[in-house]
Image (tube, rainbow, N blue to C red; front, side):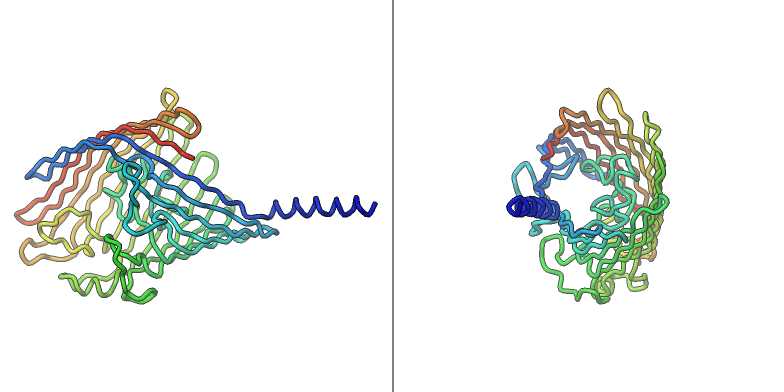
Length: 379
């Protein structure tokens, strides 16, 4: 009897240990395809044809895991890399885990995380609200259907970020987020020495709420980006505010045979859309609004995605040589995915984007056309 009791205790102990042990997974995506792009800036037209990585889904690998602490509490992490499948290089400079680097705690009262992730009004990351639920092609298949062409901030990831996500209550979920310093390195991988949490660093604060019931989903995000005091003062425009207010929202409804969606955004104090380099647009000096409409639908065993977007904005200062400026961008895209298995699908897409800025006596316009084909494998 005593031996049987010891055996039973050992079995129960082993079961409990395995149930509460950390669950760690290796996962990833490999996306390779062919791409043709034509860019016309009004002066020259450039055509390119190449093998491309991450057109549909960014090529990546990651580690994720959770440990069950019991009583509804869990600790987890997510480390997600970004790489180029065509040559094996890191995709974003010196960052090993460019896409996400998070430690989080899940409780009956919500989830709290710290690390690198996407902003609430981004189309990327664990907590994004302006991705696939807001636009049919999200932040884009390369440039095809990219919401970043008409909406500001939808592609942003941030360092040093705290995020809280509430449990879903009566269909509502509330999110709050703050980044003490949006990036520790610049685009070339050099360290940014601005002091974290101070006005020298570029910071971010956001509040979001989503509501979903049945096939209906909607959400709203209000955010403020406090630009680096040093960067703003070093610019030509000293009369502009050193922060940006952004209000973003979306709505979608899944009818089964088609899922239409609509997204809109207003911003004040935003950066430009790389539209007028020849006249040195102050990147902290635009005000405007944008819209994206689209839909997804099952077609011939696959998924069809169509989208279009437009924005209109103005500069908040007057340039001595060119006066005030105004711009508008337009994009349209269509994509199709066809599954070969549960983990592999092929895709094709085509799109057109036009970015235009007008000044007194001068206009900058860039037109981009793109066609692609490729395959995605998930593991």
